[in-house]
Length: 327
Image 1 (cartoon, rainbow, N blue to C red):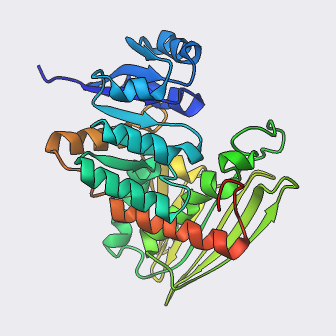
Image 2 (cartoon, one colour):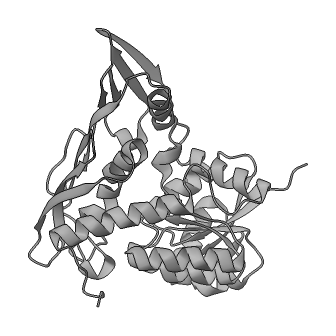
Image 3 (cartoon, rainbow, N blue to C red):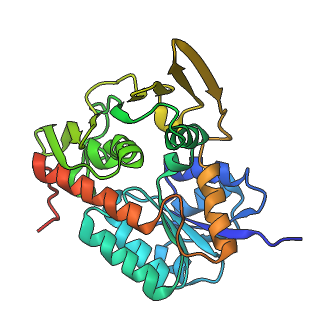
């Protein structure tokens, strides 16, 4: 019988709970340990998911021999230090997006992964969504011709959240861009690559948190119109238009259960009901890489993460998004 891959959960919040629920759906996965800043939080999570090893600090989990790979689900500004500590202890790492706050952090993370010879991947789960994979395949096959226009948005109302929450507290790298704007940017990058030029504008909370950002990515023969926001909801449908047809990812496109192709005045629908919360696919990709002893994924590589943070940094420079802890 094949041995299970032992996972450690770092930062047992709401996202980690969704992820852990999906780990339960993967046959060769085991939630072996959980670590939090307090033993009480870790124990509560352990009770929910039947986790054997419980740690009241992240370092204790990293230094233990109870896990093969850790999933880091803390606020953005803790990603770099925790991931590096884990890798220095020989642990493989799946780290929530964004991998780092800015490019220099991602460069440091990639260097640590190489030095310690461990697997590292940014948890950009939408890359592994079957609907998004289908759309990418159709475009690569030339089904809609040359892509000339892409639109994607991601927004929800968050002004009713606690001002100290990760979405609104600048000390936790708050705002829409790093949390959800990363998704439309990712889609433009996945389909069209690196743009020649970026235009962007943001509106801000009185405490300095970026609340909404509109972006145009300019390519030689295409444009991508992107948006993220915390001040209202949006349809959250993605459209990719080419010279011979249009592709739509169903609303809440980053976790779509299907897509459609409009071509020659006909519509063809593709349905891909998600397993669990939708994290199963990235978990399976991690397992595939670990079993093959590869240190990065072909579907979302280290270079992909470096390109993505470069785009995020450019938008931040254009709009003046900055956090108090940055020098």
